Image 1 (cartoon, rainbow, N blue to C red):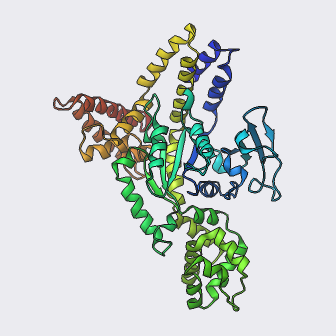
Image 2 (cartoon, helix red, strand yellow; image 1 turned 45 degrees about the horizontal axis):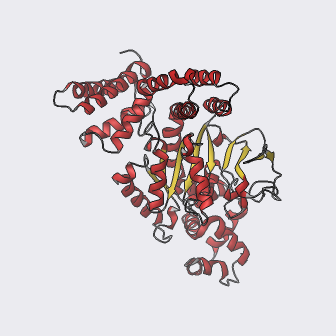
Image 3 (cartoon, rainbow, N blue to C red; image 1 turned 30 degrees about the vertical axis):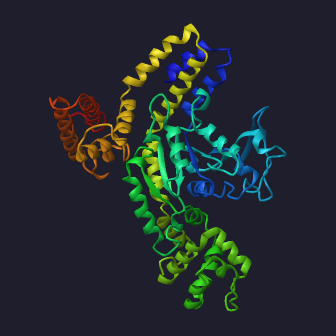
Length: 484
């Protein structure tokens, strides 16, 4: 794809298509772009803060939340506004010194195409995160900005290579957006989309077993054929709990300690409702109503209940221990692992597909004779590259277009990298499995799919799928595991 992009740049040099092709070339060298999308108030900015481990994204209804905002790794903190007309300009930090309370420097949100925030962060080295205004916002304009940034409207490629989509229930607008995001010439479907059951702590009205209930709901979504056709998996995450745990302060831990030291019956009565906790008079508790309200904003009622219970049991005796325990229970770590295994592990493939779309869109928009041969070359790449063949087959399996047994479907998804692209993940073994045992498992898989490819009763599309899987198994044996 790098070679094809360079050829296109040579053909269109000096013309109106040049900037877009230059951007496509640069995109191949950048970290993967992952957008966080969802309906309004689904917790997108809160989840982004949790993933980065910093309070970067504003979570209230300010001007900045109405603009698509990119967060990328940088040497120093900087915010650049890219207006729809005119050159980019740097924005001054807000009173707190960060983006949380900054403004647009006199510009209106509708006049800004995007904000780009540079921030030195290990979490942003492997992927650039894109925060978006909520779908189904109060104004059609805000929803349109998100859709135009993340879908191939106007014939151009999406700004994102992959999407983390937050949902609380499967709403019609959720389905519509996910179907739009997957609708492109390479039949991109769930391979580049992860679903998050957002605000998982609110499932069951924040009861102590809320996260267990959320896990059961997410499991039902994962096996729902409609959802399988729209995203790879659904992971329950308590975003507010994760964000607070990642940025927990010592003074907040001390406040939790004071609650745990107060009479248990009194604290239980306080924690029945948010209003009681914030406003009920407790002379023996050294926490003002304003301080309790601040704790509610940071933890939520469920987070406070859980933190106090962890202090009762002695599990979290320090701020660091409480932070780790809340992170574990929030569901953030499975999401991080999924991002690394399913997105970062396929970063080159996903970026190459984005570049392919950009070049194809350029050729179709500016059809000059010198570029027509590139369409043929792009088709060869799309049909011949085994990585793309794996992606297309995984898509087809997940939407149920192949007549495979349940056992075959499970094996094929795993071999194609549906649960992660590392060798041990594809083979379904533990990461410390000896190479000889992995070779044995790979040979068995190879033999299975060779038989399926050659079986006279197999349908034509099943035989083609089996040949792709044979090639995958051969690659695992020869390329990843050594000569056999």
